Length: 114
Figure 1: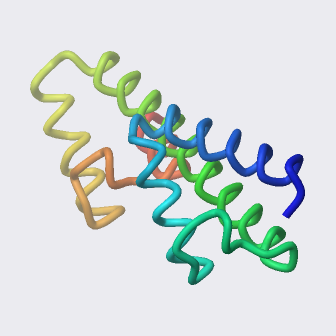
Figure 2: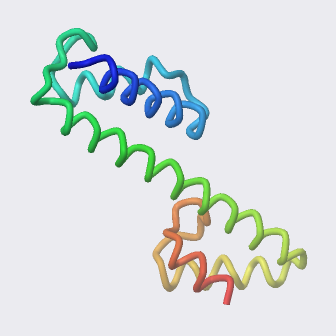
């Protein structure tokens, strides 16, 4: 790989680590496992697009998780009464199979807000 490609991967790993509040070494390990390599030096030019796609998917999932956390926070903030929270819990359990808000998808959370 050329230095520009290596720098781009490094920046993506850094962004993912910051967004996911995890150590960048763990992100690198996941990438290495995905590519079947032991270090960045073993990543070939032909593996670059796979590495980029994998890291972009991780980054998208991290942003999705952050957006869901914002919705969960807003939902819990809006529902202060115990009766309403119990109704929300029942609604989510019946309609989505889980009463844990953090386990729901964004569309499910938006439906629960309604």
